[in-house]
Length: 45
Image 1 (cartoon, rainbow, N blue to C red):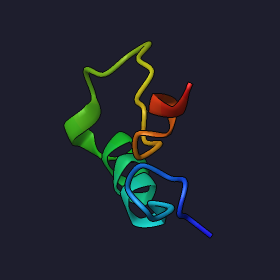
Image 2 (image 1 turned 135 degrees about the vertical axis):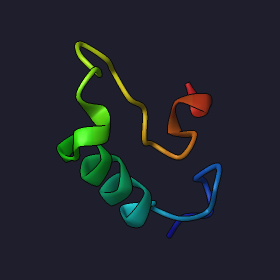
Image 3 (image 1 turned 180 degrees about the vertical axis):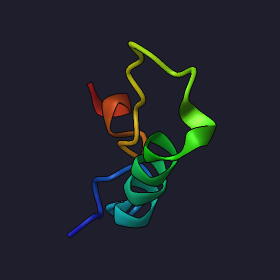
């Protein structure tokens, strides 16, 4: 299923970690950013 994906996995846990960080107080100064959590999927383009 993930043979053509650069990391060979979907990264659900990685995306969850990004969401958890953004919902925490540690991200209070993060504004207007695009955070890529695609596991290198854009490398195929």
